[in-house]
Image 1 (cartoon, helix red, strand yellow):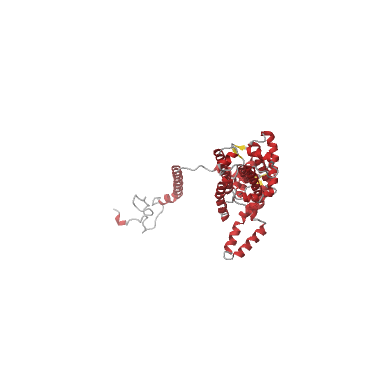
Image 2 (cartoon, helix red, strand yellow; image 1 turned 60 degrees about the vertical axis):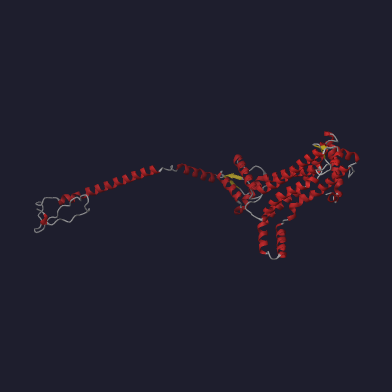
Amino acid sequence: MDTIASLFSFITTPVSWIIVQFHSLYGAIFGPDTGWAWGLSIVSLVVLIRICLIPLFVKQIKSMRNMQALQPKMKAIQERYKNDRQRQSEEMMKLYKDTGTNPLSSCLPILAQSPFFFALYHVLSKIASGDTIGVLNQSLVDSAREAHIFGAPIAAKFMDSPEKVEALNASLTEVRIVTAVMIVLMSASQFYTQRQLMQKNVDLTVKTPYMQQQKMLMYIFPLIFAVTGINFPVGVLVYWLTTNVWTMGQQMYVINQNPTPGSKAQDNYLQRLLNGITAHGEVRGRRKRNVVQAIVAKGADRNDNERKFIAALSKAGFAAQSDGTVVKSDTVTAEAEGGASARRQQPKRQSKAQRQAAAAQVGGAQQEDSTSSVSDTASTSKPSLEKRDEPQDAKPKPAGKTAPAPARQAKSGQRKGQQRPKHPSSKK
């Protein structure tokens, strides 16, 4: 580690100068020889560096999203040219060029802050040995050697010998407890940062090897920090723990305010946006209007989260416009109210006994109607029957003809309809 740190000795002077400036500020508040003055100087160094790296962080976010979107196309190229490595590489480079994607952009923040990290490591190593470096003169070096953070000198390491720790006016037990706690916190913050990225800010509809790689890094990076952390001075652990916490907070802000399309974070963001629109009746904020405008412009290319948002917006009686604003839609409201009224006017579902009773009533009514119809028919045909029953002397009948017997009502068990008259010889 010392050999690698010595390669970045050219940047130790700017790093030491920044630390000295912050130390003069915090030393006036907490005292020049306290651990708070030197520890907060290192924390302020991290904050200053990370503020300067915000543009690179934005590029990292864009590059990661572009890489996620390109994964299906990259997989298709690999399948198509799996036997031709050269053609596969050429097609990949062409894809990156056409889409303006740089695979190395996702590593820019880490690469950019690596020189500062190793320069700080080199400065703290010189402080531990009592040597001057950069703008740190001997008095400042002695002051830094005496500074303790929770009982551990900022230049002490977990693997230092008892003699070296005693030379820094501290005990080995306190140094190892403090460094162990910092290493655990550093690894846990790194794991949580990667975990929230995988669970909330990844498009779950795209299953690619890129997601598996990120999942592996979620477990590998914390392990690397845990193994290498035992060789870091307390000041470097403070630096790396601070930068991990900064990254975690910065990523939480990006996930909540600018989530990846198709991710769980986008679903939560659009739900919050919908609640704000229904509460105020408008889209408040320029950035939120840009989000609505982008969703409207997608049209049929919207993902599931965006389609659900538009449907919920219409159900609430609003229509999204192409400029990102929303208007109250009377048509949608009327349809919603009409549908609700229609649903309220529907009869309640009847039980089986109620349906059987209703069917029996309908059957009884039909039977009464059929009986009345038969009675009406009988009454209309009565004159002809009476005419048939007139006395024989009223109208002479031709000789040699026998009058037909009157129709008799069919008894139970007999066949209905007109019965054949009996033979005259059967009468007695």
